Length: 185
Image (cartoon, rainbow, N blue to C red; front, side):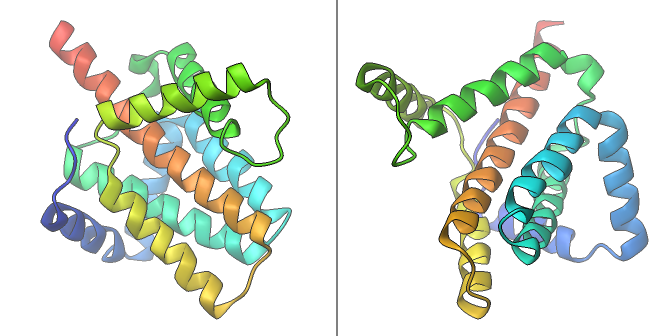
């Protein structure tokens, strides 16, 4: 998968913002059907982690996740079906991201050797992949704008930023995996 250009990102975000309620509901229903495990993780687990600290920030997170879904659909086509991707692969990818991100969290007790290994692996994977830096920045800016208008607990903001980053990376990995499977067949 390639990094979106500024123009492509702008067009994809415009597409996301132009969806009316019915179209949005249809997009979410399709996502929940084709990616039920990921949908449950994003809209259930991730949003609950944020909601425990700040319900309004959790609502923003869910809105931003909808934007991510739309951006990837608009820029790269329909979402890959989880039955084609292999659930074990998706779970392993999410677990790896979580472990790597934990290594960056201050205060997490972790052996220095493991912390360094996870941080280095994360940095290598980030530089080797097309991480959608423009989309990550847009989402981070949206969270910053929210916090400027409605101060939130710093821990909730950190969790929201981390989770939206994880969502973007999971979508990128999911599309990469589907693309590799299609070319291998």
